[in-house]
Length: 96
Image 1 (tube, helix red, strand yellow):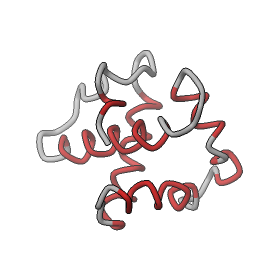
Image 2 (tube, helix red, strand yellow; image 1 turned 60 degrees about the horizontal axis):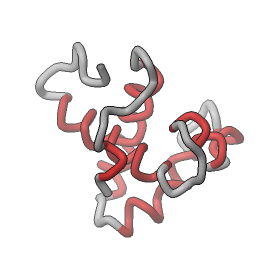
Image 3 (cartoon, one colour; image 1 turned 180 degrees about the vertical axis):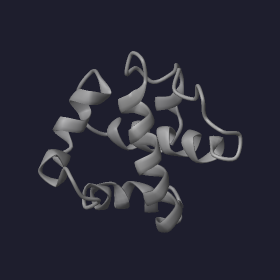
């Protein structure tokens, strides 16, 4: 489960982040979020935060604050990577 073990204070950021990452990646054609990640071109920015700039237009189009959006993207990506099965919960991709 993506939110297992998350402190209540952190839960809103995790939810926003997972929603943002999956929503942004839903604009890339593929089946699994991991495949969408590869299709997004972010692999060349591993090890730094420059990959978040690729999502910036998507965030801005939805009225996300850049500072919050970037922080939440990192939080959401970490939760997706660390999830037991790596599959977002049903309906997450529908937000955004």
